Image (tube, rainbow, N blue to C red; front, top):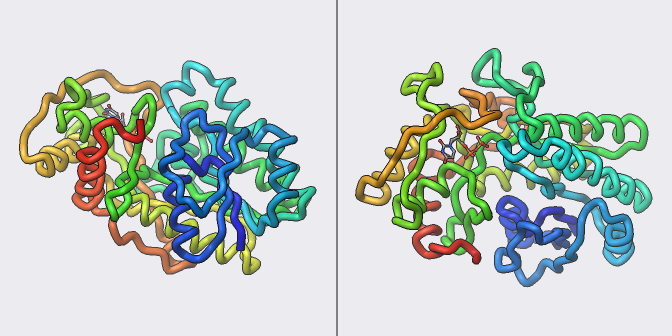
Length: 328
Ligand code: UDP
């Protein structure tokens, strides 16, 4: 089976590509390389440099390779940037990938796994959040992912494209072999930033928002180890290929960890305190995002194995220690 991984040179996409190869699949990566890292890819996966919106490139890819399924990770992901540049997010995350769907149709490729997000829910009315919770994204990023989910429903009804959207909570951590980890430019994610501050690679770490209605005033998130997240993709891909209907699933652990708790865990892993400052809330951030993962657990027997915050932080620290400049 050959899987097209869009955004396959990014943090989650490259981990996914390596796992697909390790589990006996073939993989082809399509990545614009605006943010991707060649070093994160296994030699077995050919890289096509291009955008999912580029019809010539995508058409050629489908004619050069017999693709059995698509995993779509390509997309912009910075919540705060999306508030400043909403149209950039709509163009890149919603309109551009329509070309990918059109080329799938033409090539007769039906299954697609879509990298969605807990940000589709907005400020939750109830926690933990189940899939049928109201969708009212508070950031253009969340809206762009929700819009593409809706588009996938249209493509199923009208053209028989089968999709599973996975709504990730907070993907984090590095590969268990210590060889690959999270490296964004600019880095915006909590665990990477705090690890780098603990290692002296940044002057300090800032907690965004200490006045939330949460036990310690900082925001609660549900951190999921990249390994567990990618394992969920393989399970739903196999189901979709075997005829499972289109659907959506949360991928999280069901446990909320506060920003302050993450900082404490990183302090423990580093073995020393590091400079932490308190700042205002970041635009577009809901106070609490914690998954109800019962649906994916029950239907697919998926269970996180590496997602306690201690294991996530230990793997992330190991990677940042050995890669102080990321992939750069
Ligand atoms: N956060 C923070 N300081 C930072 C980066 C993030 O306090 O320098 C907070 C952020 O406001 C959110 C949580 O950490 O409450 C997780 O943010 P991240 O960007 O890692 O993931 P997101 O939840 O936005 O997908």
